[in-house]
Amino acid sequence: MNEEPTQLLASVRQFGIQLSATPRGARLARLLAVEQLRSWELEAVSGPVAQIVAELAANAVTHGRVPGRDFRLALHAAEDRLRVEVTDTRGDRLPVAAGGRGLLIVGRLSRSWGVRQGPAPRKTVWAEVALR
Image (tube, rainbow, N blue to C red):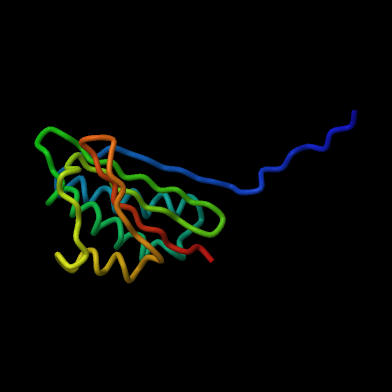
């Protein structure tokens, strides 16, 4: 039996980190996201992604903060898209696009964004950016 080697059709890169739900943690999220994109050689999208991370992280530490609990930043890069996710522990407080300028900026810089609830008490706000 002659088997051909299987090839990985899509390269998926992932990064995730828990950060303190403080303004310093939000700034660090933006800096780490930019550095991760540089290491993945995705500098072309680092400007918009930095702004998206800054807005989502600021929302997590301002509106999604629970004392003593962190928030999580995750980046997932596939062939044609980069997904940014920020998870906090205030699943009872869902973001509203008309609530401020931050999510309007996220909406303009991303091809789509949304909110995923759970598992309790968490929620994840995500945004996707095209890589091509």
